[in-house]
Image (cartoon, rainbow, N blue to C red; front, side, top):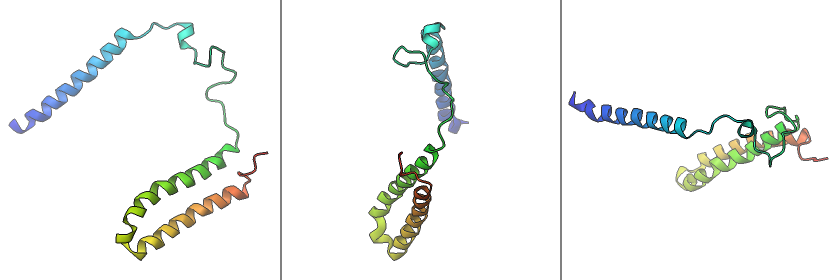
Length: 116
């Protein structure tokens, strides 16, 4: 039982802290009001619903963004260890870049880079 004292005390602190934060949030919350409940848009009423649909042309743009974002996410750590990993790591990176290039070429075919 003595091995669980630290675990139980940490659990008690976490539960007490969570309860205290909830109590603090209830005590300091602003009462519901029509002005407070409106979304902030420089004082103007919103012109469209918050869950309105996006135009379909933004989805291919998202694919291109993800292609470049994922590329940079994996290339930086790869560049740090490529000298130690050898030729296999270089081949794997070019295969990875080929898959991302396929996504970019698809987006190009769909006309993502034409903005008119």
